[in-house]
Image (cartoon, rainbow over all chains, first blue to last red; front, side, top):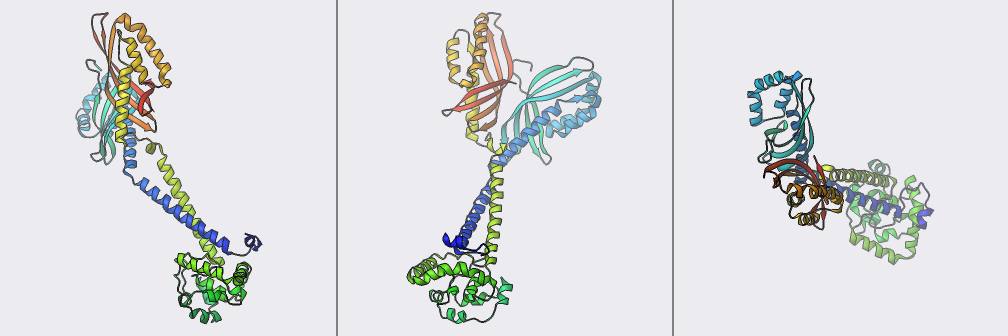
Length: 182
Length: 287
């Protein structure tokens, strides 16, 4: 080390310092390789993809549960458009078929419904088939024009299907207690 | 390295000396000799070369494949680079000259291990330092990216990703919920004992309150309540904590009244904790 200390500052590479630099380079190379491999394997892992899908479908289902339980008689078309945007398959067909009926009903009853999600979780997820089932607790507030709102607490099971345009509702059913009306 | 080599590409005494040696050493990738390549191929420094009387003519480690290094060693006064290296390089070299045999051993060992020599030119040092900095930056970038991915909420939540664990959470917490929310007015002590087995101390206070009501009302109503899980889904599993969304049904038989069946549909968010390998209820939120 004395040789190192005696070295003038301008000297580029005394052997010991050069060797230290070499070791540092080797360590840096190994670290870069190790972390690079770790990063890539994590990035491309099936688990990560599944976790991401799970979270994606949950977000989509929560939003869908809100959209499908929200309808303002002032803006029936906008609300029904959102219904169609969040659904696919049989549900979407039903919405399209009965659209005029819904519009008429909501317009006549002059009701506004809004919804909030209390909690939700994915119960099943088939990544290959692109199908998931999600439980969603929804509080639906129905406000007839000029009256006090009534809140109903609903339990929904949504079947979500993966489409090119993200996860959409392909089946929608309330989870009722046996013998109860809902 | 090319410009330097061409600027100092004059014939030198060391060439013949090195040409006589039979030892060949591998060149190191990244130190690419262009114009200097033939010189390297002709033969790097040997022990004999290193032990020539000229003090500055001795590069410290013998296994020096870099062309610039060997050139510097042979041409100590050719430029400022050589002059700068002299103080540092000569000190150990002189010492070795005094004790040839250990130095020779060290060289032989270096040869066997094929360890590339440290850079001895400023340019070589700069290149190696630059490479080190770049590699370190890459390592840090990859490390941080990896850590961010790993520790993201999505990655730490193993619900559904770990199938066995998810099933276990669903079953054990589901059973615990059924136990806690079922009771028979004739067997309340047993019900309470069973329930205390499936909850953690965290939930004890809430449970005391819950079961206090049951103890007040159940005997009066002669109630027998059976809880069933209609649907349940694991929202998250993070280590030893888990959250289960439960759609709970309660069927009650009230013997005191006219034997009616009452079905209550409830929504619970149950937080579970793993205690000694078993999932127990740590908190219940009626959603």
